[in-house]
Structures are given as structure tokens and as C-alpha cells.
Amino acid sequence: MGYCTETDITRTIAQSLTSATAQTTDDLGTLSNLLNVGSVLDKNLVTTDTINYYIQLADQEIDGGLSELYQTPFCETVNFEDVTYSAMDEYNDIIVLERSCPLSAGDIVLLKSGSIEERHEISEVLTLSTFDTVSPIQYFFPAGTRVLRLAYPPPIRFISARFASANIYDKYFTAESAANVSSYGEKLRDLAYSRINDVLNGTTILHGQHRIGRRFFNPNLVDQYALPTGGTISKEQRQIK
Image (cartoon, rainbow, N blue to C red; front, side, top):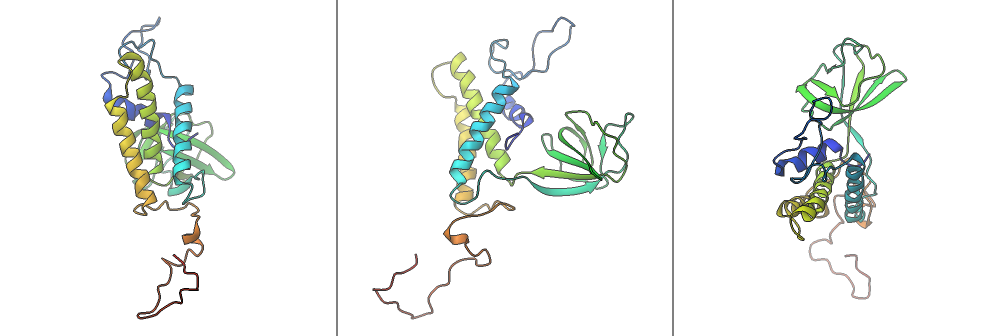
């Protein structure tokens, strides 16, 4: 798994498409839930392997751009914890929390009861405290089960989804339209690079990650000490800049 999920890619790239599902039925008469790009849907099917490949490329670009300030790759942290209001079994596969939290599709949660743990991706948020998961819950979790939301520090997930979506969209846009780069792909890259520049400029701090570099030798200091007012320093002495 990368910094973003397939759900993030699907919802990001589908904003520029007229349709994100199959327009023809299969042998059973049902519409397949596919991620398609372009007008020739059967030729432009984006598989899960393709999505994972472009997410990996996007994550490498993020690591390369931010490795001078932070130790990469980045690690997930817990940014929300609660317990379940009701038990989850064969009669109830919906997770209901005791408190409300602004959850969204694509978020990763960890269910923990004693020594039993299950990791799931949120597929649909029904209310602020109720949501469903992509894969079915395998174990019986009683009421009071710990629910931990795991996430990379913002805006890493946002950047990864934009980079990967831009590359996927350009791949099929160039193949079906013309030998150039789409404006939508360029817009996604501009948004991603803007967020990376915010981190490099110090406007955004990636909390929970290990910062490296000369400035962060002592994390208790906001910055280096300045010379007293009117103080001078010999030209022969090496200055710290």
C-alpha cells in the first residue's frame, strides 16, 4: 500500500470524465463497476496493478522531493481513536462509533480487540459515526472494540493521489486524443507541487515524522541564537550561517 489508496485515485480522476462505470452489461445483465478513461472503455480499463504502479511512482517523487527535510519513506500515525458502540458479527457488518469524526472514503482504520487486529479501508461513510469497509470483517468484534484511524501526515495523501491521477490520466489522454499533455493532468501536478513547496518552505509541518538536517539537531530550539545587540565577531572566526 502507498501513501494513497485506489479509492483516492478513482474519486480524483473521475471528476474529469463523463462516466466512470461500464456502459454495457456483462453476461448476467449487470453493469460492472470499472474505472475507465476515454471513450473506448474496453481499451482503456485501468486495472488495480496499473493504479498501484502509478501510486508507487508518485510516492517515490514525494520521497525524493522531501528527503532533505524528513526521513523517508514516511510512516503512518494514529490521528483518531474511539471504540465501537455495538458489536460486529454476521448480523451487523457496519461499524458504529461512540463519537463523531469527519471520516471519508479511503481512510484506513485498525480494529483492535485484545490480541486480534484487522486493518480495513473505508468504502462508504453513512454518518459521522457510522461507516462501511471495502472488505468484509472476518472476526467477531464486541462492543467497545478500539478503532484507530491510521494516516500519513497531511498533505502526503493529497499529493500522492494528484501525482498518480495526473500520470494515469495523461497516459490514456495521450493515447486516445493527441500526442500532448492534458490540461487536467497539469492542474493536478500544479496542486501537488504547490503542497510540496509548502512543506519545503516551512509553511506546512509533517507532524509525527522524523525531521533531519542541520536546523533540526536540537528539536527544542525554534532557530539558532542571534548575536547580542551591537555584538561583533572576528573576521578570522568561521561564522555559522
